[in-house]
Image 1 (cartoon, rainbow, N blue to C red):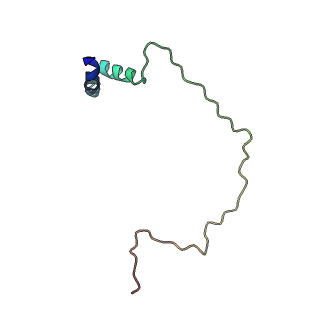
Image 2: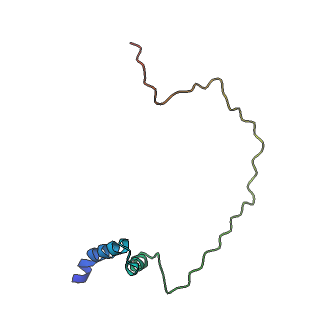
Length: 82
């Protein structure tokens, strides 16, 4: 029971030693987090990305400059007309 109460301090100590370069502490910390599993065979997952049924974009004429658009400087100061 007392060991359970000390678990946060123990884990902080393991993390501190891992940051200092202790490989055994780093492996333990990664194992506890599920990021490292030394006793299992882990193979990369095969991922297939299929783009079937997605229509290709058509040639669209885009007008880049609209005469009704006014460029605004967002950093400009606002003048009051008083």
